[in-house]
Length: 360
Image (cartoon, rainbow, N blue to C red):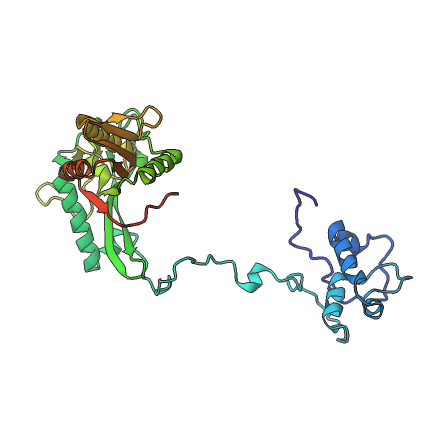
């Protein structure tokens, strides 16, 4: 066995079928059999040594022959010893070799597995639009963009102001994605307004971007404690989580395409809250959410900042944050329900009851 091998894709050994079996190789050139690894050559002769003597004599060349038969001739003789050798051809193509590759079998494409209820193939699914010009032609994408724009206005994400002369203006774009159910049916059409954060400058448009996320051992320990004590576990998701983060920097963004103000079309958006695509959006969402939990009496865990603990006389509640996904458990169901009501008033929460929690 060896490592760090390199393969010559332009030359395939034993591809020349024009040589007769009795023609010896020139002494000036090395034998083609030396191209075989030692393990492969030994395995071939070991497998032939187990055959009967009459079968082995029909496969192996005479003892006085200097060069053994090519490998593909031995394989063909093993499969059908009575079959005559292939006729000689004047031109031999290097790519037409007997080796079965993945290109020949067609196994290069990625296969979709573990989705037995999926009835619609990827070829039948319509491709999502990549630009506003393409999406505006369809009514369902126009409705999705209107819903996203209404959510941004409800949150008070920006304020239209006159464009400053010296400030830098970042752009924005619409992204589109079709959400499917497990059976292949369409769940909803999702449009999202994303700021072009790659145009932001550090120290001017943003400062800190790091946002803590839950560690995998913390998730495993929390679920183990909940199962051992038979506690209820709630999985929560925050709708448009990054839109709740308050910005500390002054960031100007161009108006979204298709929703420009008719009275002030040349105004720009002064962002009051974070938006998807900004460098500091994950950080600001984490600060906003944890600050509200601390106001309710939660405290950060010393081992994992993403784990917040509420200890009271009547209840102990553990809340784990992973970006916009939340795990909630405790020893008092009534206190958990009360906490969920408070979170729903402050943030738009989605509760997944009776569904599997995927741990990656």
